[in-house]
Length: 280
Image (cartoon, rainbow, N blue to C red; front, side):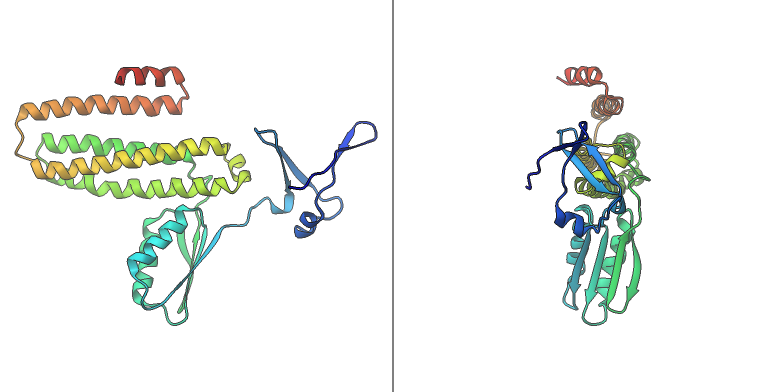
């Protein structure tokens, strides 16, 4: 950390010199404008107008004919959730078929990334979704809607002996995972881009809360999917009274679930506390 002393000019103006290396690295000239933002912790963020748009995080993978399709897919997902917006996949020779398949599978599953350049030995994938178009609250609300319907339909499939509905519940977990990846991606982008969090009207601290909620919702989605799988195993085998008991427990769980998310979105601490007391 460099230390600068505050000077006073004209009797009322406070002046501080800026690091020369920083000025040169950004090619800042006389009379250029700088943005100043006071942070919650008392620090001051100095931002040149010309670099308001932060450089996108870039990642590069080198592949060959021995690269496993599943392995590359996991690498791509990992880079995406870590906040990388530009991903290049390169090969010294023509791109192997399994590599092309892994890349296309990734862009079909992940929300935002698209192939923007394709050559015989190169693929470039960019995240084309603006965080402003799919903010955290919208993502979390969509996750809640999906997970709640999965749980409700799992119980309905048990009650009505509906195998197709139970299978549909299991398949919907895929959509929850996609949204969780998106929430994780945006969270990691915001962690390294304070200006983006300002644009979204969301502090980094608030972003961490939404990320935590998305993790919990993803886990609830996993359990709803497992519930659907178990329904397929026991369908036609449970007596009606037991099914009624399961349905009653489900109604209670969904009520607690709904009130918990509602208290969060409305920022109602009193309601959140009442919901906790009701569970205990």
